[in-house]
Length: 115
Length: 115
Image (cartoon, rainbow over all chains, first blue to last red; front, side, top):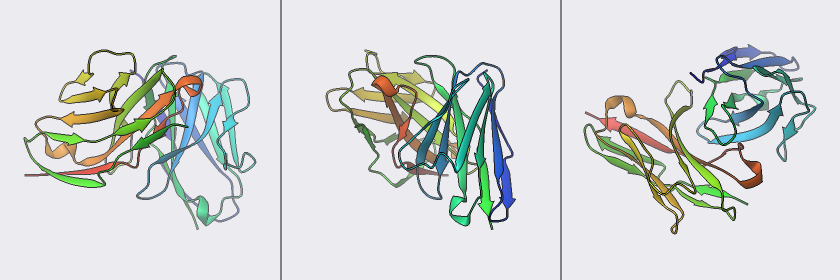
């Protein structure tokens, strides 16, 4: 149980285009999902907290207009990188809680390369 | 503000030996959770073990055990009988208080298991 999927697993796009990444909880409902970014050889950094039915909460320094988050249902959150630039190239990982005070499970990640 | 510190950037361990990965934390919250995740080269984050701040006993999960020393604010991971498949990046993470669910990660420790 507690499986989280992400799609796509990797994407290459041209500078200026927008990219949508989906995060799904496959066998449980996730009221809250989290989006992280990981640059090469670095740790994971929390970008935003995604709550079903409400606006996402962004961490300091993360541009909400650039990284659009939509948590449309209890099993799906999407991250859209708008007008992507090479510096947005990174590994994006989502996670979901199985419940209050429970363990977070991570998706397999999406590797974004912007040319 | 909370902080997670992993001081070992990398280490080699021989197959079948035990290895201890260090993690210290700092938080003013009384209620917090500590996690260890494994990240192989594929990038996925694999949950290993969880310790709650009010748990009196050290957590164990198979070959993984967490040496929780609350007064010293340390949560070291012990992997017993290392296997070649244990080669990966290991991250210590914490969540606490009113921001429960948001994980803050340490810098990680790269473990290489040798035959």
